[in-house]
Every structure is written in structure tokens, then in C-alpha cells.
Image (cartoon, helix red, strand yellow):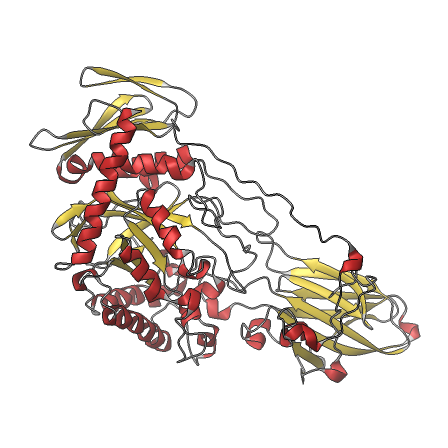
Amino acid sequence: MALKKVVVVVLSMFIMVAGGEAAGGRGDVTYDGRALIINGTRRILFSGSIHYPRSTPEMWPSLIAKAKEGGLDVIQTYVFWNAHEPIRGQFNFEGRYNLVRFIKEIQAQGLYVSLRMGPFIESEWKYGGFPFWLHDVPGIVFRSDNEPFKFYMKRFVENIVNLMKFEKLYYPQGGPIIVSQIENEYQMVEPAFHERGPPYVRWAASMAVGLQTGVPWMMCKQDDAPDPVINTCNGLKCGETFAGPNSPTKPSLWTENWTQRYPVYGKEPSMRRAEDLAFSVALFIARKNGSFVNYYMYHGGTNFGKSPSSYVTTSYYDRAPLDEYGLIWLPTWGHLRELHAAIKLSSEPLLWGTYTNFSLGQQQEAHVFQTNSGKCAAFLVNFAQHLNATVSLHNATYELPSKSISILPDCKRVAFNTAEVSAQYGNRSARAVQSFNNANKWSTFTEGIPNVHHASFTNIELLEQMSTTKDGTDYLWYTFSYNHKSSDGQQALSVDSRAHVLHAFVNDEFVGSVHGSSDGPPNMTLEKNISLREGQNNISLLSVMVGLPDGGAYLEKRIAGLRRVSINCSGSGPQNLTNWLWGYQIGLLGEKLEIYTQQGLQKVVWRTDGSSIDRPLT
């Protein structure tokens, strides 16, 4: 117990020194084959992702303070292009999008900033962070050696860099930003762009470096990141999967250590145990000479409004060290805090010592770092999933629990073992404080169902949904009129869609729905027997997106909405209605009138009989 108290005190002192350096800001931030070099000193840095649009400005001071208390040196965030430039040429840095305020709060608490500029970020954020107006630029091909795309990408990155410089937020100016990222996991899609991929990588690196920020640039999951840009790792087990820096003069950085899997609708949250997280960090530092580890996410927060990508829930990485509400998630937060302290005690040999590794058994190994002055640190690894192991080092014997790493900051005493959680456990509970389940207490409004005769506009084809709605809404009505003859016999409606949900109505009566899923096929089909009256029938199809896509090659070519519609009649066979006179309405009336606001709810008639509660679109 006494050792743990000493570890925490040493860590607190170390962070205070780091904060002082960030405030002073002398010279550029550089690097060598061991670490980032800040103010002339190599540093082991622990970082956590906290995204400013996924929390509120009122939460930022507490989130940053708890991250610092948890042993972090750095806060990492993406920059969200579509949040800052939703309309071409019109920028927004207010409220949750106040990037400068967020960074200055980090600086005020003595931490550094890792700024992932993108501007493609993925991040389970709609359209990968791109503003949708970019889709409509003539001749554009995202993330390739394409002049229109490069023009707008460079313009945005320059705007952000210039803003950071104006506010004196780069480390050489006395600010907290010590490293930036350009692009994001491009290697995963690069082959799809063929000969236009590699030149784009070289251009992006050159463009970023040419902005002369005085701090290094990095590219994650880009093994061939051009010098001087640092290639970094993203993943669950970078201590095992990372091929390493592509130059002996670059340090080993881990930009995303996933603290869980992001949740999607229809799936249970995927948890990651604190022991596994700690094991992955210790192994990366020991095996890969790692000197920078970022937790993605340290605080996930909330996907407000229409910000999440397809099927991603409002709650984002709720089981991160700081949960959705900014509360400490135990034991993860506490276990990692102790890990950081133990590794910081090993800093000198890790950063300046000679490295050796050797086997201690069939599934056990040692990683030892020793300086010329005799300082020594060791990491003893047991890979066995279910078996403890007894190993020897320097004539001493150590018991290693299954799947664990023991950290010996002096090559003698065990300061921390990844599998032994001594941090406090906690739980989070909720209790009902008020009930609203009495139907008689509710007033209701039912959305109207449009038809082709009262549509906003018409077209003789099925329009692609995203191009039509321009990210203004998740909803698009497709309507048409169909002339039925009694001799046609039994009828069935068949609809193929590339959206996420479809609701079908015949003559204002609901006939059925179909839902897609995050891991299902991109196409979904509605097949329903319907009853048509003699003569004209109004058929209305509500196509719904559950967020825009966030990644993949040729994102600008992705399609959504209805692709094929037919009515199959037993008497006359199928009739393809794809190239028919279609009426359209973008969005819902309730959205347009903003009936969810105090002012908007006065614009419609609310009924109190409770009879319409189970009706669709209510």
C-alpha cells in the first residue's frame, strides 16, 4: 500500500513539470527514434481522446481535470470539418464547436494537445467529418489525387492551422499543441484509388509539413508515411500488430487504443476489461519501444442531434474511463492511473537505456531497459491465457498471473501487474423519479402522409436520398399514384431500398415496415400484400436514414434511398414503377415546424384522447 502512495505522488509531480513546460513553450517539438522531444527532453506520454462536440463546454473543465488526475499528459481530439463549415465559406466555432476554448482549457490545466486535423476523421461521425456540400463540387473524388478535393482540403487545414497560430496555441508559441495528424487510416482504402492513391499521400504530407507549425505531423495506419511524417498504430493490440515506425529516426506512437467497441443499434455494448487494456499498453511500451499511447476514447460522450454515422447510437463509448456523463468509470480509470504511475517511474531507462529481450519460458518473456548509469526497468510478460508462471530475473523469482505483465521500475520490485486490479470497483445505478406511462396524460400529434398531388416537387425517376436531402434531414417521402383495375387480381408491393428504414402506406393506411442493420446487407426489401381500391390509389413510402455513412473509398459515390419499386398483380404480372412520376417531400412536417421547441409546439393541434398513441408517425 505504501508503494502505491509513492507512485501517485511521483506522477503528480511529473505532470506539474509537464504543465510548466507547456506554458513556457521553448523551441519546436521534435522527435527521434525513442520519443517525442519537448523542450529538449524525451517524453513518455499518455493521452486520451475527448471530442469537444461530444460534450458541452460546461463539462470540459471537469473532464480534463479527471483525465489529468488519471495520469494523462495529453488530450487528443479530432477537428470536425462539417461542424465548423456546414455551409461552404460559413464557419462556426460557437458552443460545443468552440475548438479554441477547448484547447485553452486543456492548456489552463497544464496538459498538452494532440490535434488530429483529418480532415477525414471517420470517428463514427456522419460523412466521416466531411461537410455534405463537398459532395456537390463538380468532378470531386474524395481522398485522392484530385484537384477539387485537394483545393478544399488544403483550404480547411490552412484555416485551422492559421486559427491555432493566431491564438498562439502551438507549443513553440507557448501553447499546448505538441503534435498534429493529417489524413486518417488511409492505407485501408488506398488500393481502391490505384495510381491516384500514393501521390495523394505524398501531397497531404507535404502540404501539412509546409504549414510550418513547429510540431511534428503523423499519419495513423499509413506504413509509408513520407518523411518527416510519423506513421502510427490504431487498434486493440498494437504491441503485437504494429510493424513499427518506417524509419529508425521515428518514435513508436499508438494513436488509438480502443477502450471498447462503439455501440450500434441492435447490438449489446462490447466491453473491454481494465486488465486487458493495461496489458496492451505495457506490451506496446515493452515490445515496440512505445513512448506515446492514446486511449480512444477516454471520454466518449454524446452524439448530439444528427451527428452520428449510420446505426451509431447517441451514447458513444459510455464504458470509457470517463463515462458518457463524465463520471469516473471504475475500475478502468483507477487501474490505468496506477499503470501510468508505474511506467513513469521507469521513464529514464525506457527513454535512454539499452534494450534487451529474452525468453523466460515457453510463453513468457522479459524486456529489460538499462542505462550506463545503472538505472534499470523490466517488463515480465506471461502470455499464457489460463496458467500462472514462475520466472527468474537477476537471481530473483517472480510469480506472474495468467495473461499479465509485471512492471519492475528498478528491475527488482514489482510496482504494478496488469492482471491485479487493486483500484476501487464501482457501479452506476439509476432510479425512477417520475412515471409518464399514463396515456391519458399525453397529448399527441400525428404526422400527415403526403401524396403525389400535394408533393413538394416531382420527378420521373427514383432520386438518390442523400443527394436530395443534403443532410438536412433523415427523412424523404417518395409518393406515386397507381390506377388499379379489378381484373388485376391480388396485389403485392415490392420495394428495394438502400436506406436504413422504410415505412409504407397505401391510401394513408400503414401496410408495413422493414429495417436494416449495421452488419446486414446494404440492400433491404419490403414485400407486402396490399389491398387497392378500384381506380387511383395513393402509395406513400417514407425512407429513413439512421445517420450518414462515415468511411470507405469513394464516399462521394455512396447511394441511399429507394432503388426499385414494383406492384405485382396476380392477373397481369409485375409492373416496374421505378421510372414513374414520383412526388417528393423532404423531411417531416414536425421537423419543419420544430414542434419539439416551446415555440413550435404551438403550431400544430395536439389531441388528448390517447387513442392515437399506437399509430405510426405519432
